[in-house]
Amino acid sequence: MAANPTVLYPPPERDNSSAPSAKLLTVDNVNLEYRTRERIVRATHQVSFDVYGGDRFVLLGPSGCGKSTLLKAVAGFIEPVAGTIQIDGKPVQGPGADRIVVFQEFDQLPPWKTVLQNVAFPLRVAKKLSRAEARERALHFLDKVGLAAFADAYPHTLSGGMKQRVAIARALAMQPRVLLMDEPFAALDALTRRKMQEELLRLWDEASFTLLFVTHSIEEALIVGNRILLLTPHPGRVRAELNSHQFTKDSSGRSDFQQSVARIHRLLFDDTEAVQ
Ligand code: ADP
Ligand code: MG
Image (tube, rainbow, N blue to C red):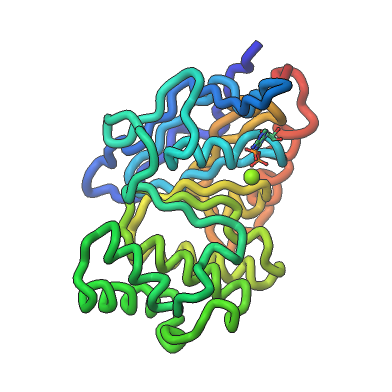
């Protein structure tokens, strides 16, 4: 039986109070499966959620619960076996420049292109910008992630954190309807990870984009997200949806933050009552 999701907080207040945010992405009762010759692996079961413009929406759950699979389905790489995914009211049919993914791996940048070329190339191909326009926009976003001075460097000369910054600049330069991030900081050391979380929030303040962010870290979810969807272990079902806009990068020492961490931990791992 599918558990009824627990709503832990009142419905979220939107960040831009001047205009009500529009529903941007709708995931409705989505089942995702992998079919191999021997068997069918169900990755998610009847997952539903809505993402509104300007949200920092986090998918949080243990390893193997289907977070990456969900993100790939939103990106258009995998088709649901049941349920629907819509963006701006239209069904997702394959990948598109309105949804750009930043992955965990540091090797997502073609190594034969400089940093600038890495960011500018998709702008020329997908956005049909002229060489000069692509260069200008690429430099603008490289500057935003603090890497303008490294425009002519090759990826192998950069640290892991710097490579992720390039990948983020490349994604933001495309100005997608929704930026998809799959554990983008999970392979970084703890200090760099914290710094990147802060930078992402600063970029969100400046560039005001919509984010769908995957993590298995409860703390990261609370810091990065304004809304969090908790998924049960494999196959992923919605366990709860909660509001976390009250926490910022400086909240982690606060007692209410620690209480939320403990509560989410219980929901994810200890409380079996609604998880079959
Ligand atoms: P998460 O990102 O939450 O760790 P995934 O979405 O990667 O989880 O995987 C969800 C489930 O689907 C897991 O049980 C995993 O083993 C399975 N899975 C993922 N990729 C494949 C694949 N290519 N073929 C078969 N099973 C897969
Ligand atoms: Mg994953």
